[in-house]
Length: 548
Image 1 (cartoon, rainbow, N blue to C red):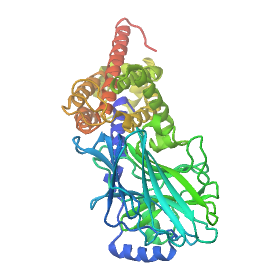
Image 2: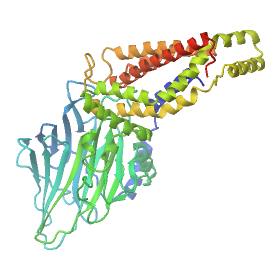
Image 3: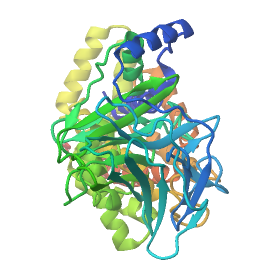
Image 4: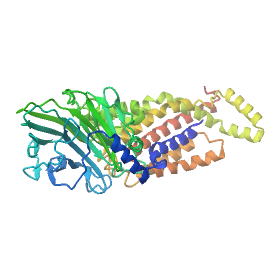
């Protein structure tokens, strides 16, 4: 396998990696299957009810980072707009994370349950003293109060903090029922399985429920697995069901929403017994990722204040790593996490040094190239020697024609005389692939690059190059590489190598500029290294030196 064949393999692998769900979509259930599944689900469902979303009576909260809409009646967080991020499909609009419109459902819910798992305030609505709140200081509090029900006075309190995407949700309960009361609190994120705004063929990432527990570590629970459970009436999705700490929620490209069971260096909300994690399909195209938390008993004429935190915002590593243990794992690097995570750490350090994410990518690519120099040098020397003997190889092919046995013997003798291992360049190149894929995901998954400028026309490294200059430069560098590499022996392969730069450039028209920048810099460094090695070996051969 030579370098060109390897590049062809990598191109196909890259397309499959990014477009698997597009190429092989999972079949959806038919209406008849869904109706049967709903009947089965009702018979085997968890006792925790999922409130149906009704019309919103909006309470609007505006801070420096978010604009939130809380439904006054249910107390659900129905909409959350991130004011520091623009929409993926329209840069003139703000990015909307939570929404309860006709086209998209993604909300955060919380409620109190009795011993049977039924909502305490099932038919009771909250009320707020005002409809609009604006941050004026370090925090703003929204108190929703419900009429006393069965001797219980319940308030739900939202607290939004300046400069933060962390929302504190607190239940204040006063017991006048005449007897102790034992309650549970249920927290969930409710979402449909729709694709995030702006997701395209070449920027597909995992969207769906996630959970982290000390026992199960980081686990993704795909929508498809929950569909299988819903259709069969079973509950077999693979994730840890009980935990004393951790977090649970939903992730998508760049953004996340998670309920925090134990803040970093703080107390767990599960101190009164194990929390019950609950991730499932809850209805027609709706899925929940949540937790049921046992609360301490409330004595008669006593009260309880019970807070929990919801993080709903960008997957900024420096921020989320300080909120809860291993929350940075929500930035999903997939199976190359072992490579991508340290590479992003280095990228972040370089950004701290140069103050620009584009130049940090350039420096990171140079550093990775330098570290891998021994491997790439061995590969390029092997290819350079193959390139140097290409005319003799062509002469042998013309001499022996269709006599493949004689041709193979003559080629092996030539390789032995010239001290060439025809596979010498393959293994070192294969060893680099995990690192390069890890670097790809480190850049591709980093919300830090969103709206981050580089130079001139590149004002957002997370979006495609608006003038396609970087993809064109990349195509040119790939054409140059084809002339520096040994010519393929197979005519069909030779034709494919000529058109591959065009295929790559078209693909990279749709890639984030930060990724294309990485490839361009890598290609330029590769060209310089290949040219130098080719020139050195040609000079040595011209002097009659046998290159080892």
